[in-house]
Amino acid sequence: MKVKPLSKVVLNPENFKANVSSRTFDYPLDTAIEKGGSNTGPTPVEYFLAAIGGCVAITLKTFADKQNWDLGNISVEVSEETKLTPKGIQKRIIENISVEKKVSEAQLTQLKEHAKSCPVSQMVNTPTDIIRTIKN
Image (cartoon, rainbow, N blue to C red):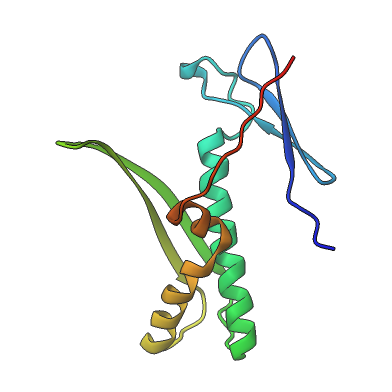
């Protein structure tokens, strides 16, 4: 039976520092000092961008392994771009993917296309419902 991914965030009531638990891992979450945090960990957006980058890298490695391609290190730099347009605020996610080992242009094209199958990217690119409850 497949285990559903689950993360729990507990925010400190005095600032924006939080503790996150995922499976057996505990890690910090915070905001920058200039935004009222204490800068003890990445922001939620930084974790989100890292999740996309990690997912893309793992997706590409899995694909390359099936093709018997040696890519060496796979690096995925992910950033957010926000701009004001006549239709309002527009956000884009920019991925810059690089592989250590030399591969052909055809292989790079296949890798770029296969990166779209990353499950985290698909959550962003397709409608994903959020079902929210609140209690005390």
